[in-house]
Length: 245
Image (cartoon, rainbow, N blue to C red; front, side, top):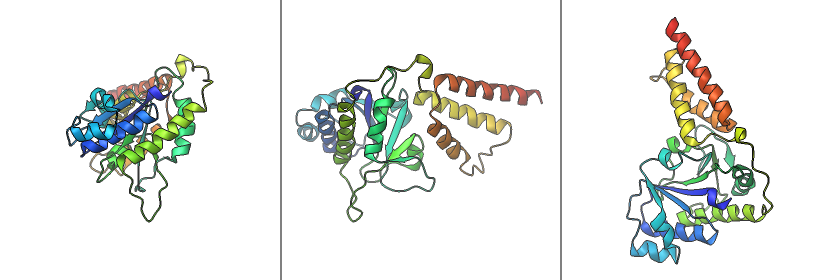
């Protein structure tokens, strides 16, 4: 299970924080580190020092230009959010997230991304809307700011506790039950928006948060591959019908 959990850091600005995250991950048995558009060098004396023996994770970390690239093969993406947003999204506590992980990681193709934002500003609304759910660490309201490595440590610990409680793994789901990876979901959202514009249901000039709300709906539904094929087929048939009119 732990090998299917990816820690994704977006726009990290200090190499020491990347090293601290590597140490927190290695402590809990996680090894998949992805960096999105880092704003600093990854391999420095500070990052290696803060990694404290986990610097191999720094050397093998993947680097991506966008969040979409970093989570393209993931079937669940959860964004760490420190504050409420104007458009409510499914919200989990770290323990609730951990309770979901064994089931989410059963299939051999499953990948879970735990996404963390910039040290100074966190995740943008657009980035949070790329996630199926958000996780909020319930800190002291009078002093709620968490160091990046500390936030990763909390979720990594909960992930390990979930793994320890599930040593007798459940059977792998049938192939027909495989969830859609993030890359396919993004292609579906592009197809959906294009179709809605074609039938004049969606006006990009006056979006009214339509696509954001539809994104929230489908991410909450967690479609399987067969279901996604049906949905894409409906959109294709809709486009063909519109072209005939």
